[in-house]
Length: 431
Image (cartoon, rainbow, N blue to C red; front, side):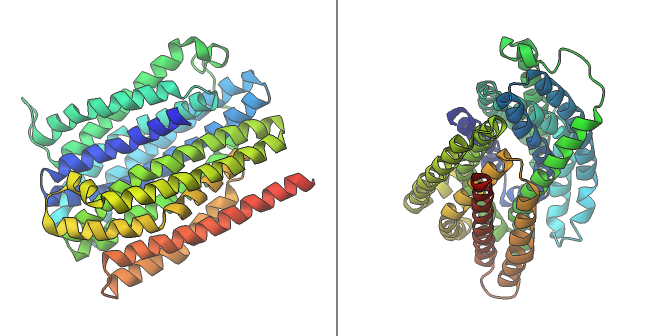
């Protein structure tokens, strides 16, 4: 789990670096990136989330000792990833036309639009990287991905500096430069991982680049059948969090900037239960392939217990170090005060968030994806979103109302996902 955890923190750290460097430009640049990220993140995670299907399928084949299937799964995943990446890039190119419809203030439109155009160029790299990452981690080789993610953290700083602040012949691009830097970095990460997989001996028996393979309808169907519900489930959850910035945008730059800071902090902390969920998907998927039910149950219980401990630790970190954390992002007094209050709401949902994402990871390992998809849709968009919008727009709660809606949605999702996991385990135990 440790390499996966480091990888997730590194990935989240990319967003942290963007937020900190944009905050040094101006509150408007930070708000524009918040709006742009609010649209980019759901699209990115929807399409890269579909590629998560590679992980349980490879883990199952690995547990069943069928290496010939693993290479085919990886190759077909790359075909799908390339197509989905191109589609996602095109979507992000037309996304700026929706900004006025979504009520984004006119002053933010130029910067947010340029950010979306720029960052969309990296989408094919994002999806293909996700496919290769799932393949590598499911085989028990997470360290190459970890190393690349750590190097990416270092590389992003000079890339951001060059494109955001200008250097030599490259003009100062502000928030748009943040998008270009991120897109370039995504291509560099994919090229690095593909090169390693091609050359490393650890992948020799399951080498996806050893031969050209045409599109295989059987594996394409299996990957998409499993992956679409995963992608949609992630989309329903993340889009709720991302859309919150758009819901708050008519209420002023200060609230949006404070919300972005609080969301950035919680995104870093979320990497802990997310890493645990990925590890659970791999281990549960392997035991599922072996049909070793007792070992699978033990892994699930241990995972949920570990998630509980981590959640308590993150709650303590938020409570005791809120001022120091916010000071990393901004020195603006008004933004700081709002961000400090929002972090209290973030602290309140840590346990529910850890439990729901761990349960979802276990269910993915057992290749149960349709049920969680419907659960997340209902919890986040039928329940949480209306509650958040009503409290933010039609009461005096403003940003706090949005975060209360998030807490409600996560609580409902947690209860339903844990119930589903219990029922599936009970059915396997009695069959």
